[in-house]
Length: 402
Ligand code: PMT
Image 1 (tube, rainbow, N blue to C red):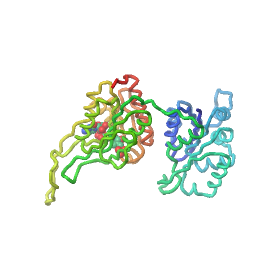
Image 2: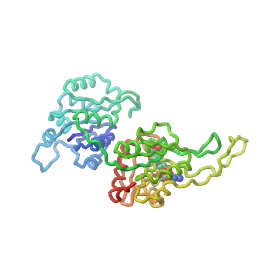
Image 3: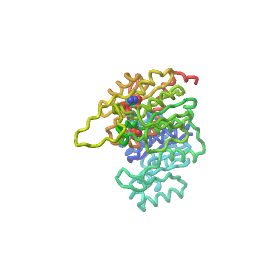
Image 4: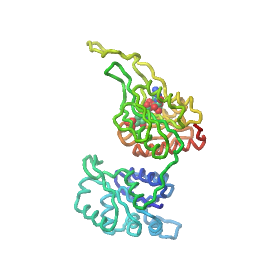
C-alpha cells in the first residue's frame, strides 16, 4: 500500500513521526510531504531517515525527473493522509487553493483522503473551520477528529491531534489492508519498569519519580509485535498491558529476585526500571518517632540487576537505560561498558518533556557501534525504536532454543 503523508506546520508535527512508523509497521510504503511551516517544527531529515525516501517540501525543486512530481505521486498513492492538518491546510483544501505541493497534491489525487486536524481549541471551534470541515466531509474526505486535552497553547479543550495509533488504524480501515507486524514472534521479552521502594520503617520508603510509562510502552509494543512478554514492575498507578505476564515487586531486592527467576526463559531483557542504587542499611520494624534531633540514615548499595543479567547473557540481548542529568552520552557509554549491556538507552531526565512521568521521551541509543540520537517522540514510538534496535543486535546473534 502506498501512502502520501502530509505534515503541516503545528507543534503536533513531531507526532507524525509516530504515524509514519505505524504505517510502515503495517506494511505501507510512505512518501512524506511537508509544508514549509512544518519544517520549522521537525526537520525533513527526520522523516527521510525513517521513511527511506527523500521528503518533498518544495513544489518547484529542480529535478532530473521529467515527470510532474505531484501528478506522479497523486496517481501512485492509495491514500493521502494529512496529520497533523492545520486550520490553514483545511481552508486550502476546502477552497481548492493549490499554492504548495501538499495542497496541489490534494486536488490532483483521486485516492481517498484522511485528515487528522490539530489546532488551538478556538480555531477548531471557529465557524470558518467548522464550515471547511463540513464541506470537506461532504466531498468524502474522512476525518480523525482531534481529541480533548491540554493543548500546547496551555488551554484545555478539543484540538489535540488524535493518538497516532488511532490515525493509523483509521488509515488501514479506509483502504482495507493491513499487515500485522510480527517481527518479534518467538522472542520472550523480559521488561522491568517503574520505581523501587526501599523501606525506612513500616510507613516510609525511599523511591523516585518513575511512572512506569516507558517500560509499559516497551511491554505493549513487544506484545503487539508478537513477543511473549514478562513485565516485572515496581509500584505504579497505570494498568499493565493485556497479555503480559506481570510480576509485581516493591524493592530492588525483590526486583533482583524476580529478574533472576525469569532470566532463563527470556531471549531479550530490557531494564527500564528506575532501581534504587541505595537502600537503608536496616529497615526499622517500628515507625520512627521524631525527637527534635537530626536523623541520619545509613544507606547501603543495592545489587546491580542489569549487570548481573548481562553476566549470564548467553545469546540473550540485554538492554539497559541511563537516566542522566549531565554528560548524558559520556555517562551512558560508561554504563554500557561497566554493565556490559548490548545497548544503553540514554535519556536526559532533567528535560521537562522527557524522562520521568511525561508521555514523551528523547532518547539516544548508545552501543559499541556508535550513538543514534532520536528526536522527541511518544514513549510508545521510543519503545518501537528500542525494539528495532534490539532486533538489529539479534541479526548478529541467533535466537536461542528455549
Ligand atoms: O517510568 P517513567 O516515568 O516512564 O520514566 C522512564 C525512566 C526515566 C525511568 C526510564 O526512561 C529510565 O531512564 N530508566 C532507567 C532509570 C535508572 O535507574 O537509570 P540508572 O542510570 O540509574 O541505571 C542504569 C541502568 O541500570 C538501568 O537500566 C537500571 O534499570 C539498571 N539498574 C540500576 C540500579 C540497580 N541497582 N540495578 C539495575 O539494574
